[in-house]
Length: 77
Image (tube, rainbow, N blue to C red; front, side, top):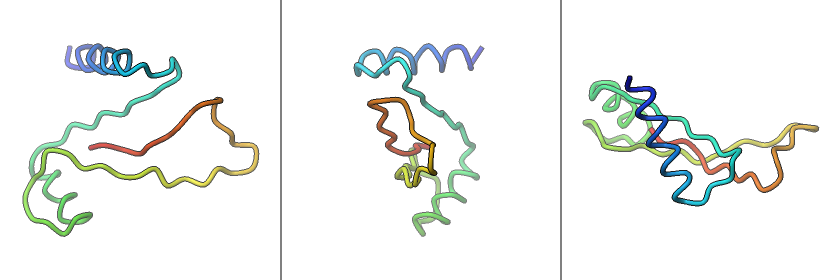
């Protein structure tokens, strides 16, 4: 049930933003304790936070080209 609702919402946002059909989104849901752990690890701040984002830092390997116009931006948790 929640998977279908999250998919519907993500598709609505991507459509509303004019994303290309090949766009992809990864959604990670965490409990406060895990979010607080990640916040401490990556930002050295205690407690949970609403969102953590990570820049896309991937160097393509030879022959590993993405679809034309693809622009990876990173991860949001």
